[in-house]
Every structure is written in C-alpha cells, then in structure tokens.
Image (tube, rainbow, N blue to C red; front, side, top):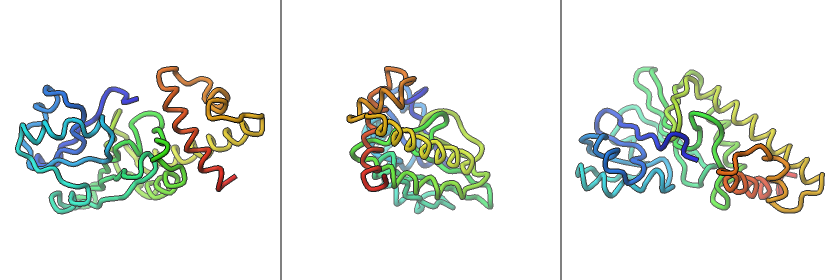
Length: 211
C-alpha cells in the first residue's frame, strides 16, 4: 500500500515533511533539520517523528505552521483520503511544487480511508488541485509527477467512474461492501483487497446522499 515506501521531503534544509516509519537508517539520512511536520496522521508517515526529534532536536510543528518556517508556502486543506490531510504548495517566484502526502500518489490512486475518509470531500479536494497547472507533485509515495492539474484531473475522473461502477454493482444486486469489491475491484491484488473494501465503504456512504 506504500508503493516503494514513504517519501520524506526535506525543504530548504530545515523542514522534514512526513518522516515516515521508525527506521533509524532512513531517519539519520534526513540530516540536520530544525522542524518536522506531516501531511496526515497515518502511521507510515508519523511513526518516525519522535525518533527524528530525538536525533536532531527538531521541533515537531503542526501543518498549519509550515507557512511560518518555509518561505512562499500555502497550506491547502486536502480532506478525502483522511479528514486531516493537507498539502503544502510552495511558490518561489513562480517556480512551484506541491507536497500532496497521500492525496495524490506518484502512481495509481489513493485509498479513501473509511470511516475517516470522505469521498465527497476528496472530490472537492481534487477539483481544487486541478487548478495547479504545471505544478510539480512531490507525493507521499511513488515517483514525482510533472503536473498536479493533470494528475488531479485523472484522479477525479477515475473516482467518478468508480462511483458509476459501484452504482452498477448495486443495480446488479450487490448488498454488502464485499459484494461490491468482488464486482468492481475483481482485478485488485489480494494484498490490497482490504484497502479496496475501505474505499467501497466510503463510496457507499457517499452514495446514500448522492444516489
């Protein structure tokens, strides 16, 4: 579910975003920093925070404070994958990057983590991110992407298509999330089948109000 692992991004040599798991080799490779923060609270992003603070003396700051320590930063609330997800847009004279955590991955699509995740919120977040044309995506997992607008547009369309597929599954007689997974996510690797079920539960909750 984490692709090649969790990406930790170091900004201006002072801030580490998403320290990742409590792996000493990884945390020591981050180097000396003054601050650390996260894009959301999942363990694969936050587990290493206490050890990184211990190694570096860095201050663990709330995402909302990143704009105080990194020039040109806009903190973008990005609910959907989780309710607490944020993205960090950094603009240096028009040269822009966005740190997206699990909102946009470097490859594939992210899980909507029922019950905390919210499909409706995720759709709105993706609509917002489609405005970031030409902005490089630095994701929480997977490779760098060249254009946030293109990635968000693809994900938005993918999510809408999945919702239509879930509607079709319900019309075919699916009664449980497990039924929907078997129909809609039949080709999903068994290792991530549980993730598909979390997303389906979030989709079904969304469809109760948006049939």
